[in-house]
Length: 333
Image (tube, rainbow, N blue to C red; front, side, top):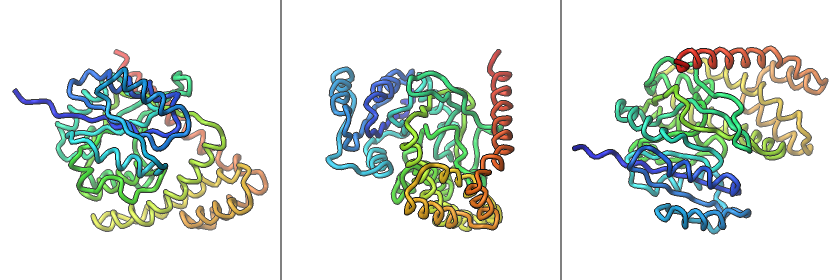
């Protein structure tokens, strides 16, 4: 009888003590039998150490450790993903939650498609109180997406419902895990590296996890600025070379860089010190400078930016409603 492949669920954490227990518990509640759970605390300053102690008492098989100094999101996750010797590795952020069939469902898909470097699924977005907010779905008809298709799709952004992913450990080794990945968009960077190395991905339209969106305005602002910096690095230093390596069309990337820069002008609607404001403007121009960007920056100064972006918000809202309707029709029976 063939042994089931081992799966490791890796949970990097930093100052999320209020959510960590729910994340770890969801990892241990998997219907799949061969699961090990790892937790890496990135020198948290809240009650995480106390929670870790309680979790080790409740789940003695949990493997947890704490860094003496804060490494940052990418380096903490990188070190953690390198620890297990399992065939498949799940990256679960400590504020997110796994559905009980997550591992079982995605292992089947990964075994079905040996060239899949990672697997992902539809998820339900939840708030800080674990209440459902909305479904996050992809308008994707194919189960397996080849490396070339994945790279072409990546031009317009990270094409997943959330960053709750299962990886093939060999694929992670082939691209040296999260080496040189920027914080806050390290998952997007990794997906591009995997596609560049020839790995595709698989998607399940089933709701297999819960993605939490929470935090105050200042934390959200920090993430958005770090995301802008990371995207500039990814587009110029990773995605463009990857497209060239695989002889794919690079014409669309400039268009999407300009569009992304225009969308991220909204960062400047927040109150920023003049030095930080100048930095954000420079990063926007580095990402996708254009006459349109200059125009939108001027409209922002005049208080008209939201009016210009309103049609795009309506389009996004309609797409979400259509995807939700299709999901209900497909899975309601």
